Length: 471
Image (cartoon, rainbow, N blue to C red; front, side, top):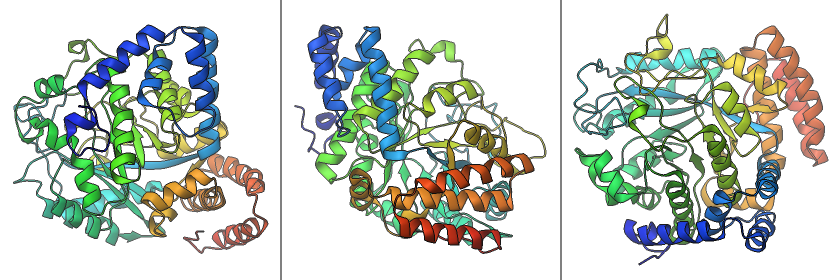
């Protein structure tokens, strides 16, 4: 039985409801009356249902598909403007006891060197990331109760926050680790994490169990219900994601929107972020073995539909994707992007890129400075802001500000001030020149006169060596 308020995985992600939604979508994919009704609802920027999203996804009519893209662009602009939040992943350990068939960390992979960073090595990695200019990290580790216990993760978070190097500091640590207990989520909350991120991989239970044949991750319900436990443990901000290409993309699209609807219904606040990784090559993983691989055109439409369906959520694109793909999806819905990323354990302190311990191949190998430069040339404002998290604007408090549009008077000046920090401390001469021109234009978009005046004052103080101003 489908029940978005239920805390049981198979009731809030109902297989039957997904199949019925797909059937309805296929039946009405070219029904102009229904399509136009859904689009009119979408333009209100309050979201559409998983079933309505499926209809738009299946639509074959060129003029409607153009309207879908246009609507996604407008919604992205309404909630996030031109701001793109910058972050980097930090891989702590690739020890793992699971048997996931699509991930090279799987326990039976004997070719991959197993590495676990010491606290001293973590310190070196963080200094390397700070020297690039990063302020926000997403830490990653394989599931291994012996090698990667919760105590190791907590100690690592404490180490990361403790490091102040030159003008660098990590101000927000997001955590992407395996599903765990309410008690452990409470410990993560107390450690000061930002967002707890967990990819569902696939919402199809039968496929999920085949793809995870061994290890604790095999338990579909325990994994799928993790976000509810995280919120029960006091974590306000959670991040969803599926690995597109494991199962049919329409099934996954409906599933992830249903998960967002469930969090709204059961916990009172939807996902802080949604990630959209695609299956890609890695150590002993051949994407030719996955018949559901998603082509670029479909992938771009998926991003647009998620933006329309869950307009308030942050959307994340990783360095799995090429520069061309990243550029295409930025305007359609993406609001967070990684730069200068390494997906290998200890990768930031390697003198040369060594991907022997990498979780996946990186398509976009540009440095953070090159990515920041590129974003600004496209008219975006790279943001290193973590103000909402540190000011307690998380969970439902963040969402209410975002949905009301009031947050723009915090976000835009904060983005510009953190960009100014980056330009002063880390940028190349060309990036600094472009950035200064961009800031002088973008500051005029801050509509509140008092905020704009104060932001200009802060920008002057940043130029004179002071740091970390925020609204």
